[in-house]
Length: 469
Ligand SMILES: Cc1cc2nc3c(=O)[nH]c(=O)nc-3n(C[C@H](O)[C@H](O)[C@H](O)COP(=O)(O)OP(=O)(O)OC[C@H]3O[C@@H](n4cnc5c(N)ncnc54)[C@H](O)[C@@H]3O)c2cc1C
Image 1: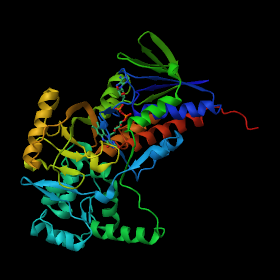
Image 2: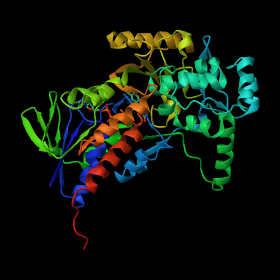
Image 3: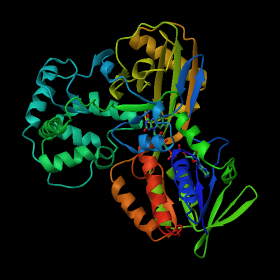
Image 4: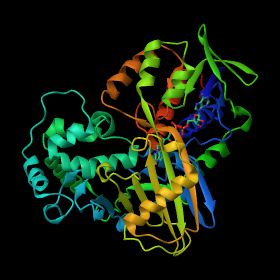
């Protein structure tokens, strides 16, 4: 009987438990136990319901283009609860010199694909527009070394595209800094496009033409984001519904991990157990802490993965006069503290009672190093003051709620993939040991689920299965 320990009960740890439990119920000779530090499961996924509003404390959705999360929902029998982002009403603004300017149609992340909207948008100066046209003639860079997203975008489209598009878009996703994030780790598709085509504009136009020829006539386009009708917590609740409670141990604050011959020993809150495999599903700094006595190279690599802290302030309104769209992003150069604001009731259905509005303002320690020192009330005040200045929103909210996350958002900085490759070599020489979750190969919910599924596949491939009848 193979015994497996999962440390960490966020979406990665819970998905691992789900796939292990599924294998066990199909007859695989294994047992698993999950150890979670806090008093609740789900990690940064948490939804609250209040007066008919749905409040997401952490992620509000996942990218539909990455199939792992929707696939898990299907396996959990909750695919009927999946909802699509309202892409028809999708319009995102960038704050430029205090004014909200819509991202022009045809700008695919930072790559312009349509002439007229680019020519007429006030988002870019004439110099940047001229550069966009010239980008068509770019050739691939000789040097294959990793670089920051900022450097990469600057080479192709100039500084204004970094300041007004790449930096705020990335800040909205990673809560990070485009001058530090790695292009190869964070936007691998763009690095590949450059390698193959030189020009990103040419590569994107060709990919779009190919997609048009391959599209089935009449097929509905995939929504950009997918969520769940009652919020992301539904996924956590459905996972918990499939797992035996006796295998889950909460409030394991002082867990220690030791290697004993070929086994792993866990000691925590009066429990001392031996395991043949360990799945570490905690953020990299916690993983480094647990691995103190192990390979120093691994700890050094884990400690190099920086995490930013973030705060989401949810504000519910009875009435609010807002521009049409899904929200706005605030470039660093605007000198504000808010990074982004989502008009939640516009992005997804079922998020607010009919006619009411819900805004979610996002702050990060990458822009406010003292972020978590501020009280909930001070952060709400800050959000309201900036909304007043940006949107002229003076209405009194029905209620406000602040969610804070201490070092929860992994930053894949330049050189990340090389450091991960080194760490994975070390991990490969530690049989039965796996690192899953958001430290290595993607911070999105689907990436974390995928990391869990792949690790479980490796573990169960070495476990005896019931004989076929
Ligand atoms: C504010 C915010 C918004 C986000 N928005 C999106 C989004 O819209 N879409 C998207 O796809 N992704 C989003 N992400 C990213 C994504 O949600 C996370 O990367 C993902 O959920 C992480 O899951 P995880 O299981 O790896 O880690 P976590 O959710 O961090 O879970 C780790 C768990 O390990 C526990 N733990 C830590 N140390 C120990 C220890 N020593 N012993 C035992 N347990 C321990 C923690 O208590 C926690 O429960 C967002 C993240 C944040 C913070």
